[in-house]
Length: 101
Image (cartoon, rainbow, N blue to C red; front, side, top):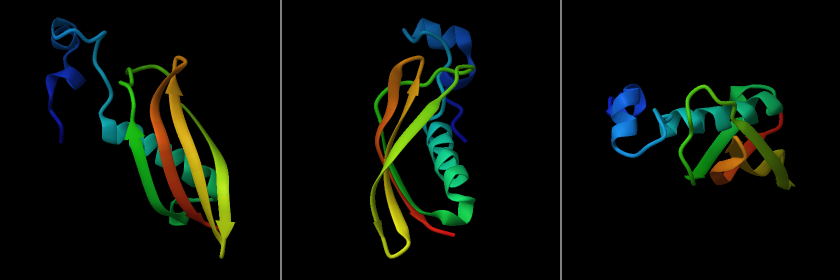
């Protein structure tokens, strides 16, 4: 696991100039994956996922994932998406490939 104190120690995070503890990037990516798989009918649908992190996620605040189907071919949807938290984009250029059920 990632035991960097910016993820687990509020005081330390503030001491190094952050607004408080921040989310692990892989946890944030997992939320993007979950949003896609829930929309596609389950985890078996996810064939590929890539993301670009653009900001720091804060603990205790909702993450909103939105996406658009760019392409549908041979039963696989290519979905472009992003994730925001409190109006700030924290993930952009996420691309998922989802196989239809």
